[in-house]
Length: 347
Length: 217
Image (cartoon, rainbow over all chains, first blue to last red):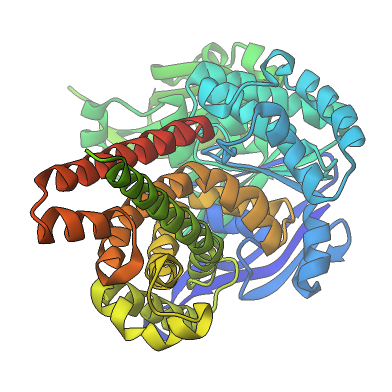
């Protein structure tokens, strides 16, 4: 449904040029919820603005529903934009219009008749739970209600794609959850393809099917959400995940961590289990079979879109032979093992 | 006070109102589009025309920097061309309009400047044309600010019109100078000033009320 091919965006020229996006390839299939996560300034906003050409890419193609938007003239592009709803971090509602009239705006712009506008706005207010707010002005609404108005407005032109630009970043956790639920609901009911950018792992975890990780204008990693949460492929991915799960080894241990194994060191590992493994008594079995002792430093079980995910930071105490045997035993059970470092055993 | 005097005061009040109303209306009709133009042609804006914008901005600034009393005298030939005379109430309206247009334009531009850029972006994302952005987003969203600007303009026009009176334009300023100052009739001076004060208060509170009605912030 959405396809970015070699999209680059450069601001300025010469030595002072800023490369906001570098050769991005991205494909979002119809009906998917695709998240792009990254730190501030990584290029997320530029990326999503390139999809509806609010920012024109310096290079590359943006193809939505088979149409190459970068090749369209301004009139055709305006027509195409009716297929692309967009919601924003700060809602961007017109303060001078009531809730009803805000939702009606895209229809007015398309030249839809007054009668048809009345018929079409009502169900959208129903869908977003705003029926009793129709005559109120945005200033009278809470942040969550404003975002609901923005969602209803974005859906008014019956788009095929919804672009969400940090749509929940200005909302409290509870409101965030209800907005995410609404987005998921819309995705299921209307089969709408959703591309969202965020810096919140919570958003990715709750509703995304696939996730891309953007860093310094490059898409460095892309995976199904379940895989990303079990085994992020990049350092940045792991940082995001660890910060989200609050699963960092204790500070005192980090200070003693050495990169290379020494004569009397033990590996500290981060283990990620998923699916059936979570329910299996792997650790006690490991201790019995390989003869290593397992000292659990931190552990957590998370549920990510119906998949259970177990995470653990543990120190494996044994001889170099037994610990390496233990590690391969873990890996053979499809457990993602990451050796964080090695510590000297305290006497 | 004689009834002739009263009549004179009444007539001067109407002259002032006439000058202010007509010059205010005409300068709004020309100044609002000009202000919109100044805004939408800025670099990065929906109808960016950086060079034309610069030129327009400079012309507007020149218009605003000429002292009204000088402008009034300087454009006498033009005034004569437009209304056929360089004295009288109608003749005073021409320089009032010329002076108020750039004033309105800058105030409108300032009001548009207060609109969060995200709103324009949202409208673009909806596939709005530049004209639709102007009529459906910019003008309605800036309505309160524009009314506020027009109120300031009208109040300024009241005092400018008093100056116009000094060169034979009629109105309350003219009356105050001729009777109050030249003929040493402090009462007349006091009355004309009092009427001007009431007038300004009236315009201001009317404007404030309209702004409150327009704003849903």
